Length: 128
Image 1 (cartoon, rainbow, N blue to C red):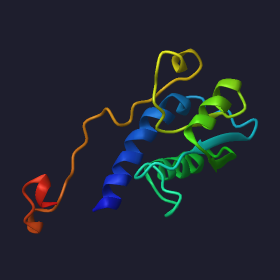
Image 2 (cartoon, rainbow, N blue to C red; image 1 turned 90 degrees about the vertical axis):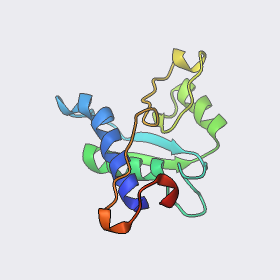
Image 3 (spheres, helix red, strand yellow; image 1 turned 90 degrees about the horizontal axis):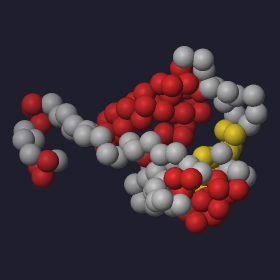
Image 4 (cartoon, rainbow, N blue to C red; image 1 turned 60 degrees about the horizontal axis):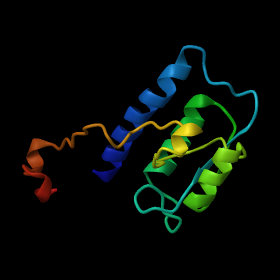
C-alpha cells in the first residue's frame, strides 16, 4: 500500500510542476542539476529511496531532460541554489530570505486520501 501512496503523490506533484511546462515543453537545452538531502521518508541515503527520489526519477523520465542528481547537506543545497551553481532541489523549506531567489511548490500542503479495498477490513487510518 505504501507504494500506492507514493505513486499518487508523484502523479499529483508532476501535474503541478510539469503542467506549466507541458504547453511548450521543458527547456532541455543544457544539462540541469538537482540535489537531494538525507531526510527520512523524503530521501534516505541508507535505502536510496524516498518521496523526493521517486519524484526526481519521474521528473527526469517525463521531461526527457538530462538532470544530474546528487546528495548533499541541506545547507549546502541552499548555498548552491542561491549562487546559481545548482538548478533545483525538492522538499525545500521556505523563509523570507529564500523567497528572494527560490520558488516553492507545496506538495505536502494538499489533502491526500488513502484508498483501500473494502475486503481489507480497514476502516480507520489507525487500522492501516
